[in-house]
Image (cartoon, rainbow, N blue to C red):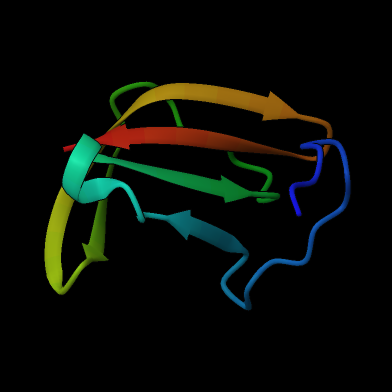
Length: 74
């Protein structure tokens, strides 16, 4: 079941959700959060995905009421 970005969602204890299921095909990772600080284009994240540490850069930013999501690419 998918929910609208405007709906409240529970987050992990870290306050972030990381979606990397398509990383092998697309080289993309999506991060969602309700943290007050929204990343900027070009910001970098080190993410452990599929057993390897990857450095990813923010390539796309979307904001919604109460949070944000970013698409990061390797």
